[in-house]
Length: 234
Image (cartoon, rainbow, N blue to C red; front, top):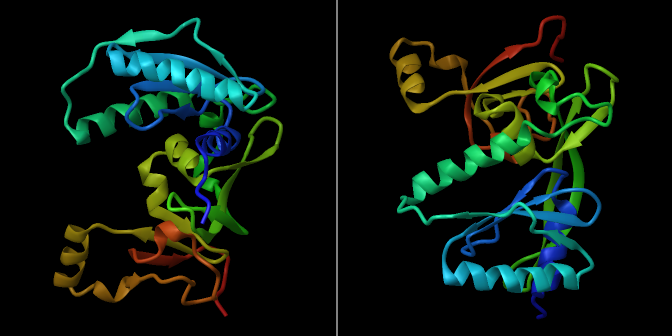
């Protein structure tokens, strides 16, 4: 079975990356930001021989698929002795900082949108090529957010929505009539001990009240639930 080529993989990643999105190819010590049409900007490179060599290879690869690489502001950074958790936290902080620069076509920052009102939309399924060359049908979801200035509705990748709205926003999910809020283990224990565990629910693939398809990130979550004011379950 044919595996995805490096060129195909890079093209797929870059095409899906939103304007201002961060791309850090695994293990290369390079950080790119998508900027403009078919252009990425190299913003940092680790100060190691392997990273310097990877920089050359990546430029050849990216330009080979018809994209441009802007290296005019690349910062050479010293390698830090960080744990995996610390590296992850640093990367997340960088991604969240970049997310603050994302804007609507009218100029309003996406971070200024009423992100708590984001609407999760199921966009069907798409065939994805796995690293081992096999193909798999994968659910496609987006979160629609609306500009408070021009009313434009902007679909965002779930990961990007999490960067903009923060972790807390991913703990709350609204169906057409219910609000689910994920709860952590200590809260579950406290609720059960206080005899209020009947308000807890373990979610599956569908809303148990109205049958709506639930997004993957809430499946398997233990949640509390309440009816949205003004709605009435059938």
